Length: 190
Length: 306
Image (cartoon, rainbow over all chains, first blue to last red; front, side):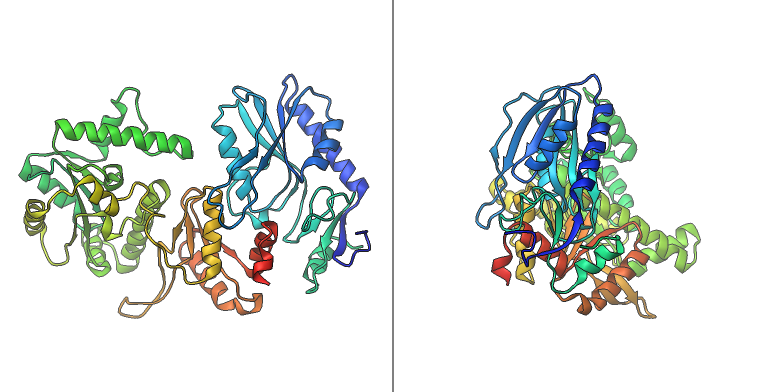
């Protein structure tokens, strides 16, 4: 599996673009949480890569924790928290770190779950935001890039477990050519 | 009256429901709880409750439980007629409550609006459509029910055929003859949630799968709860209508799911466009085949569909 993998399409974001935006978002978080010590909750597994870079760029103190939700599978009636946070969230500022928010279904579930623990606030920071695919309402307070309706991989985002470790973000190869067309309109191409 | 010390009256706009409720309260000597009394009742509660259900889901559930308890306690002490306010849902499990739905056909209600407000037919139909929508939206959004579903009521009255006095006589007769069901029986008709518990027959497997995904994430849904008329003939009969597949009350959002190829969706797109023109306040999202594939890919389900 390399960058010449035939399953990969157009490069969407370079390492430099990603690094610059992650630092800018970290700066926004630093500014908004000045004087606070938020709990940063990384949603496993995709957000790990983003979380590492983002937290390295932060200057405020924070507590880091992780959460994992059971993946959707037929036969399982309700989503379950497979890995919960260890920190008591009551009265704390919570910042959820996600790799991508698209349908909003997972995040909506998580936010509702976390709000029941009476934190002072719950905000969302996502590497990518894809509002065009949104079904469940959820507010994304910080994000690095907004993407159109295309399937992307890399920087934590996978396709059947592959491509997470790519340092750049690529569109998955789309034989219809639609993704390439949409990205061209964004001024993106390999 | 019989075993019922409470009557909840749900009514279509200009169906004479208000008049029937007032008349019933006078005939029976029951207190009438309309909007003003409702506000006084909830504000007088300790702690005070908001007259409308809160937007936030957790708060709304607490509000509904608290208001339901308040009304059930009131039903133990006093007899009353509750006008609107989702009473049929709040007291769905109260054996002392008789649930009445008052309806009338659109032309009859239109005529009543035209006479009452001295409006032309176009203006009257706009007023009627707007008020019907508001009422429907309120109950769908906050109580998650299709309020016109006759199974939520003991008795459905069509006032096209009866005046207020005759309507009251019919309701009183129905109350006399209705046996309050035991709790077990009642639950099968008036379920706690009002939806999801009745079997749903989906017209396409993808809809069933989508419903499972929504269930998985605890997102409440209704399947095809509302049909939007899109076109009428010269006599006012609906000749074209559109029923979106899902309604998500928590987001006040209709979802239309289509697995057709994009180029074959022009007919559906046209209907959605028309719906947006005629009902601009309605939020609808079309999930196209491409979007749906994304969802399936995200949930690693696509192999089942290839």
